[in-house]
Image 1 (cartoon, rainbow, N blue to C red):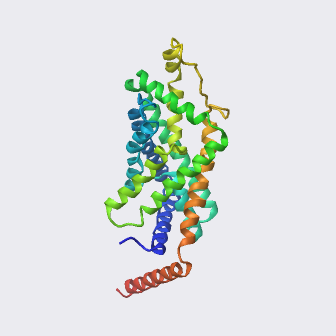
Image 2 (image 1 turned 30 degrees about the vertical axis):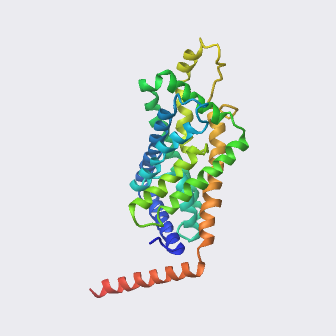
Image 3 (image 1 turned 180 degrees about the horizontal axis):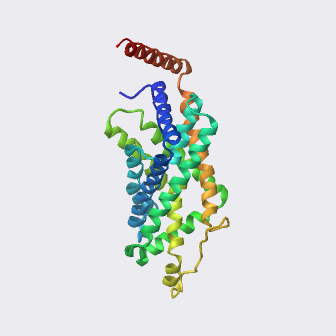
Length: 300
């Protein structure tokens, strides 16, 4: 049986307690967890690039996106089951924790910042290693990586922002529902849906994009050499900056959109749906049980 909305929100707040407790008491462990979470996201990004290279758009315009989503979707599954840190999920968990007085706003911001840095390092490290692999130097994968990079960095700020909102609206709905069910199969299905939806739906996820956009930049010299003799290709170069076709341009507005999608459209909605009186009663009963348990230990 799925948990009630109130018990579900309490469990989400418990996860917030655990994560921010790790940050407070074992900051190195939290940072390593975030590093692993960023790398796990890029496990999916690597597979998405691998299966979508060479798929002709005239065969079916959405086929490449569907294939990418189907292989990408298990990245969140391994993050959730391993308990590693993904900053976009923590945006939702942490805000629920703020609403229930588990953490302060200052602690929330600190946790999100440290989580992002760890995810950034993990994502960038994994994709840098992958970019050195010979298989991804072959023309179909070289071209596909650059195509994905240009598509994402060539969008306007508003286009990136709104697709960032939709991304975490779908993704964090799945991440927060992970704790509403008790059996593993339901957890896997719910969790897998989030990445499938945002990748197949062509959304923008800040941690996935760290790697997706870094790969064509790492390989850009090889790409330029490969297309130099192609009359039908007009070379468009990417860069690390804030202008059009820039890595930072996409990352800035993706982070902003992801923050809105995961907090306003997920955490706030789930918190408002829960009955505050029932939630308060659950906390009262928990405190009574804890007090009774403490008295029992004293007697023993």
